[in-house]
Amino acid sequence: MCSSSPRGSPLLTTLLPAVIGAALGVGGGLLLRRGEHKWGEQRDRFARDLQVAKPLDHALVETQRRVQNELVPEGESRWMAAHREWADGWMRITPNLTDLALEERYRAVGTILLAVNDFDGAGCHSAAAVVQIAMRAILNARLAVAYFLRGTPLPSPCFPSAQETIDLLAEGEPEPFHANGSLRQWMAAHDPPPWRE
Image 1 (cartoon, rainbow, N blue to C red):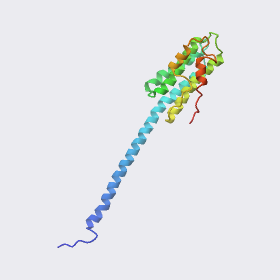
Image 2: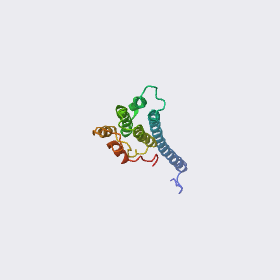
Image 3: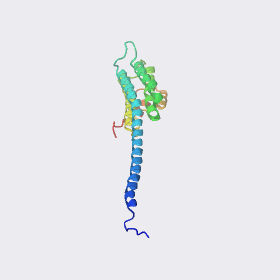
Image 4: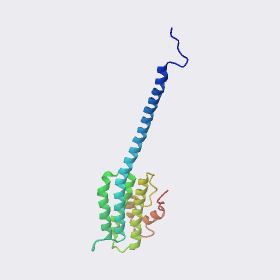
């Protein structure tokens, strides 16, 4: 007969801590890998977003400079020069742009630039008022880019969508960019949000 000690076999007391240690090591390693994987996915998403947002914002800044009549080639309308900068950004970025709200805000800039160019020279509005309208569209898009990069929900728009802009300008007003016009009234009712919330 073999008498057993109250403390158990020496083999069991030696192996049990090793088995528990190994199990904890494997479990901890799995948790760390899962955390690293999630962090890696977030890092990759941010890198993709940055690849889209940086050139998009650059195109908007260059568009804004043309609206302000900077770097406009002699003999060319500021509005067509601005639209060309906008279109270059559109061609580079939209294949990679997955955020529809951000895309819509960018599209609204191109829409207003074409609309302003169509009315330019008609003598029915002041240049300062038209610049203000175009700048608001650009601000709306740049705010969306800033919020997009931070991963926060886009703020309420401070400029109408491309289709809303077309609809507001198509209401048959003789001076569509006038302070009492539908577009300017829409803008007055939608203040720009802060750059950060």
